[in-house]
Length: 126
Image 1 (cartoon, rainbow, N blue to C red):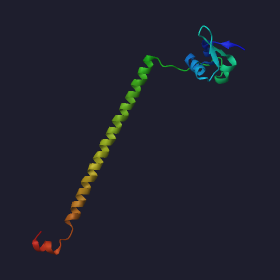
Image 2: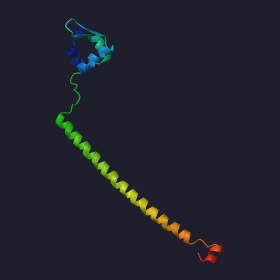
Image 3: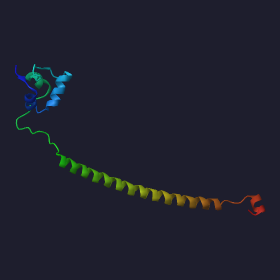
Image 4: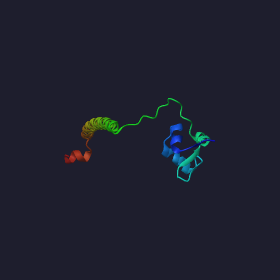
C-alpha cells in the first residue's frame, strides 16, 4: 500500500488539489489527515475514482487574463452584430406591417363605399 499526499495525488491523476480534497471531505475517496494536518490518501483508493494520468498527457488549456479579455471583446462584438442585425430585421418587419395595414385600410374603405344605399338613405339624401 502506498500513501499519497494531495500534491502527489494531483500529479498522479492530473486532477487539482482542491478537487481531490473535496472528494476526500465528501467521502468520495477514503482518506484522512495525519497529525500535521496533511491528507493521506491510499493510491488504490485514489485510482478507483480518478484514473492515472497517461505519460505525455497535457494539462487543459487555461486562458490568461489578456486572452480572456480578448475573448470577451470578440464575444461582445459578435453579440453587438447580432443585436444590430435583429434591429434591422425588426424595422423591416414593422415597415411591412405598416404597409399591409395601409393596404387593408384602403381595401376596407373601398368596400364601404361600394355598399348600396338603402331605401331610406336614398330618400334622405345620405
